[in-house]
Length: 92
Image (tube, rainbow, N blue to C red; front, top):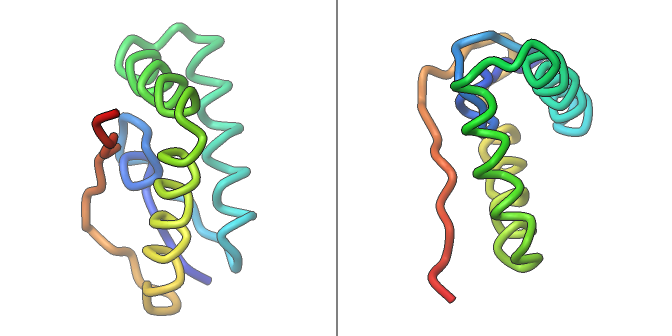
C-alpha cells in the first residue's frame, strides 16, 4: 500500500490517498476532484483548470501522467511521501 496526497496528484490539498496501484490512486484522486468541483472549491477549481489546459497537449499530458506513475512506483510501501509535485507544462 502506497500513499500520495492530492497535491502530489495535481490537486490542491493535503488529503491522503492510499492504494496498491497507480490506477487505483488515480481513480481516488479523480473522485475527490469531482467532489471538490461539485462543492465549487476555489483552489481545486484552479487545479482542475490547470489539468484541463494540460489535456489540450496530449504529449505533455502523457508525460505528466507517466511522471506521476513513476513517482508512485518509487514510493516505499506503507509510507507517506511529503514530496510536493506541481504540474509542469512544456512550452509549445
